[in-house]
Amino acid sequence: MLTKGDKILIIFILISSFLILAAFQVFGFGNEQSYAQIEVFGAPYQKISLGDDGPSMLIKVPGMLGTSIIEVDKNRVRVVSSPCPDKDCMRQGWASKPGQMLVCLPNRVVVKIVNQSIEQDTDAVSF
Amino acid sequence: MHERHQKMIYISLLVAFGMILHVIENMIPVPFPVPGAKLGLANIISLLAIVMYGLREGLTVSILRSLLGTLISGSMSSLIYSLSGAVASTLVMAFFYRFFSNTFSLAGISIIGGVTHNFTQITVASLILSTPALYVYLPYLMIVGLLTGLFTGFSAIFVRQQLSKVPMISKGTRGSN
Image 1 (cartoon, each protein chain N blue to C red):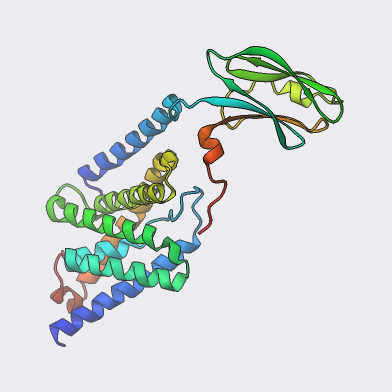
Image 2: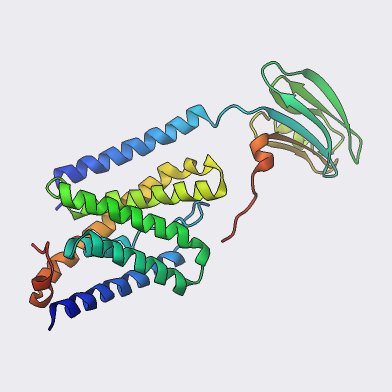
């Protein structure tokens, strides 16, 4: 019932969809400038641009419980120290891709990696 | 029965079936946030119309069932997505049916129609939302198009086999073998 042409077609579609999938994983979406945005109590505190030629520094962020120290290492960030009791934020390690976040809830400190298309993107569409 | 009337009745029946499938399609959620993304179930009807009559009737049936199906299921904003998908897949299926029926069975043509349908949906949605980001879902929708294309293709093959046994239908139409 399935002709030879059908089977070739099916294989072709399967292969090409995997290729497209792989291509997206490897190439990503164009290399926009990404930033680490630090927010305290939901309000923006500081915005640092990341990249291969980015800064390497430590930033002291005053939160509710005390001071969190955020380390920026060219194109990634992490929480070095924090006054919260569980230190979950420090266990999250490095964040470098747009969309990733480091959150310290007790201290109300959030570090988000954003790029221009994340900020412009709609959050939801209903129709 | 007068030939013209018979043809009109059968085309109306096809449109009615297409509308039902369209409404049912709208109820099945697709796990990708592409607006208007749907399984291409109603492509069975478009393909049948093409096989039974031809491209012009196929287009008529597709456009009518899109319009009426959208009116019934109530979300007019999805009209542009389903209309464009239906028209594009009908055109492509008719083309392949006319020139390549020896290479592909109805199942293959249906698969091509299903993939075209989904590809057109992503394209239209990307244009309307002004973001090319939706194309990430292309691989997944291609697989979905493949699967529903297989399903609709086999359905179309069976329906055509059964219809050709009904002399009243097979006499007024073509492509019943």
